[in-house]
Amino acid sequence: NAGVTQTPKFQVLKTGQSMTLQCAQDMNHEYMSWYRQDPGMGLRLIHYSVGAGITDQGEVPNGYNVSRSTTEDFPLRLLSAAPSQTSVYFCASNLQGGDYEQYFGPGTRLTVT
Amino acid sequence: GENVEQHPSTLSVQEGDSAVIKCTYSDSASNYFPWYKQELGKGPQLIIDIRSNVGEKKDQRIAVTLNKTAKHFSLHITETQPEDSAVYFCAAHPFSGGYNKLIFGAGTRLAVHP
Image (cartoon, rainbow over all chains, first blue to last red; front, side, top):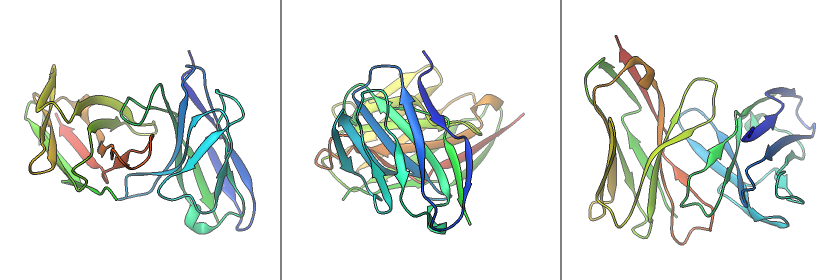
């Protein structure tokens, strides 16, 4: 199993550009999440999904969109990038709810200039 | 909503010493408390977790304790080794906060010196 994979590993965007961060898992997990990691702030939940077709907001959802058309994929879209979105983004998946182990991908480092 | 505070932010120990990281949480209904280890350039990885109906859990050199009355939980690493050097995150699962939510602490950077 590859586990949780994320692409790209690094990305530089200009303010106002849009892009999609890709996330895929091959463990047949129903639950998937997107986090951002900023220095001194730990990991903050952006959006999550409890199954194909079902998504919900986390702590910091503004400026991001998600969709879940398949169990395997959970892309994160930045609609109009802002410097405040410069961060490291992690995708995670888990078999059941938030009170079970989450498996994290390797992360995408995004810089918005 | 749930808030998790983690201390210290950095911790430096000599190889073989013990290390303790402490977290406090605000939502008394939180029911699950995992600890994740993040090595440089990688995603976090679960190392141990504890549920609200248990006071202590051990796995070889690591242990977690939970004090529900005081709303705090701690990670204990004994006989530290250089490979324990990493950033450690505690987290809490707020029972009423959404089905897949975890609230993380800010992290502790542990350095183990040979």
